Length: 124
Image: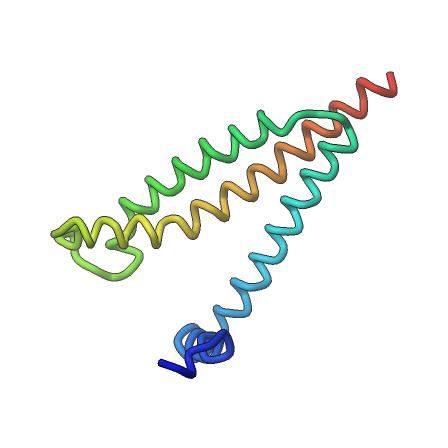
C-alpha cells in the first residue's frame, strides 16, 4: 500500500475501464467547462445563480432516483439486488454519476439562458 498513488490509481482505472475512461474524462472536462462558463456568464450579466442551481438540484435528484431504480438492470444484476442496506448505498453511489452529469448539463443550459435574458433586459 505504500506505493498507492494517483498514477497507480490511473493505471487501475485504465485497465478496468478501457476506452470508457477517456470518454468519461472528456465528458467530465466538458461539463466542468460548462459550469464555469455558466457561472461566468451569470456574473457578467449580474444575475443570481439561484434558479439555475435549483433546476440542476431538482433534475439531478430525479435522475439519481431513476438511475438508482434502474441500477440492477444497468449492472446486469437480478431484481433481488437490493438485499441489504449496503446494496442500496452502492446503487445510490453509482447512480450519482449520471445524476451529477445531468445536473451539470441542466445548470449549464439554465445559467446560459438566464444570463442571456439578463443581458437582453440590460441592453433594452
